[in-house]
Image (cartoon, rainbow over all chains, first blue to last red; front, side, top):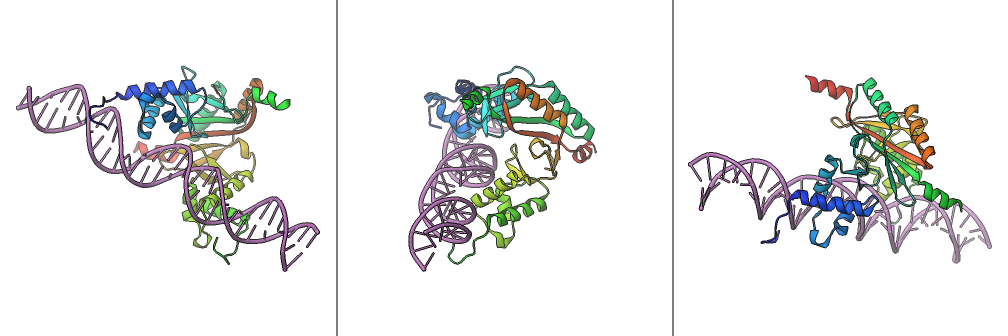
Length: 136
Length: 136
DNA sequence: TTGACGAATGTTATATTATACGTTTCATTC
DNA sequence: GAATGAAACGTATAATATAACATTCGTCAA
């Protein structure tokens, strides 16, 4: 770091990254976060990844494993049971929660003796808007 | 390709990759596949990825998105609705199918007008064997 | 106040995963 | 046998992620 440059509190980077995620309104990669963030908030990849890790722990962001990309969380609770419907045409993502789903997975785990820590549920397909556009 | 070298039918690479996946008995990366494959079957990354793509299309292998790794399929049918329970301690993977789950996701999709093409369902946790080992 | 220490942060360099792109090969057709 | 085009190959490089180390800063004992 250049001498005399103020050190940033890590929470500050988390804020910047979250702001960028929210502006994006779609999943973006860590490197997109870096290039889309305010010019006065340049950061190296590990800094971005650490900020993301924090945000995910805090329930403010999610990683979409099938895209290697990140989104701001749009729900307040149930951070661990969320599912995502990803439109492969327009890239939009719907975040949702299904008690049935969580229950089914919990039951299966219990019956098999699997200690469930986290679940990744991602659907790929076409959102209603794109479906309609296709029909024209 | 070196001149005079016999060209391999792409299906042949798929066979080699599948053999390697089956031997591994756990998820392995594309690069592990390359280095674990028979010495007489050297292949460049795109070749390995193409073979994997074929195998996945044919229902003979799966990609585990949360690991960026691949496994041989252990079920014959329902290739698209499979779920995976991944042990974060030993790396083992259980592949399973839950009608409840598929139904719940199908229902949600239908009700929202989302055209579902594929689903990724991956659980992370600890397998029964590792759970027991922990208790000691 | 000062120095020792540890935790947190920042950077460089590099590992890992994946694909764009140009070339070669081979089957097909003439 | 030459022309053609589709499929498959590898080189080179892009994109994603992290290891390893250096720096900073707050805290606490002296």
